[in-house]
Image (cartoon, each protein chain N blue to C red):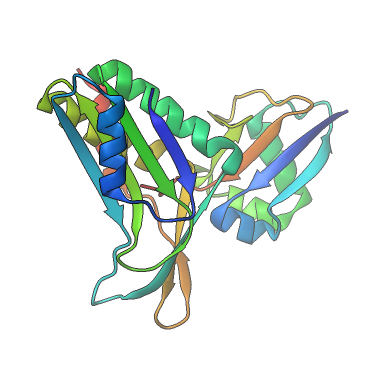
Length: 86
Length: 152
């Protein structure tokens, strides 16, 4: 039973209809990629956004992450489009 | 050593140059870049809102600054990035790098802004004159310009 804090930014936040949520993950959801699959199964709006995997980026505990990055209890996982600052 | 600020308010480039030079004795030159909100006649924008990831932003910029300091042997640098709603012509970002010689100062300035564009968690949303809004898409060219610093 791993509770993680999930954040959404920019158009992903708008698609999700929320900026953040705290969720308890099932034991088999242990990576960013598995988390995206699980979130998509729970929420069609996220499934649609995550279908564009090429343009969705993630960070775990404020560090850029890949689909293989582990996710554990207490982590903060953020999803966002490619950055456009500067 | 580097100064990093993320803030909604504007900054004074002159004051930042003076402060950086005061912190960088031995500097022979200072390179700088200021990014401003761009509009154009064909598709004028009313405003641009910069969203960011507060818990990550300063650390991500500090990491970029640390890489620049090591790579270019900087004597000091300053990065200021604004967030919130800005108008055309408003300053968005300030980058300045102080070094013993001009080449390092100028190259470090390019490196810092190229990496900020691809590694700092900011997102731009443009409000158009017709009332619509759109998220700015990352330019492939930005990634290429950041990647060139990985070569050689």
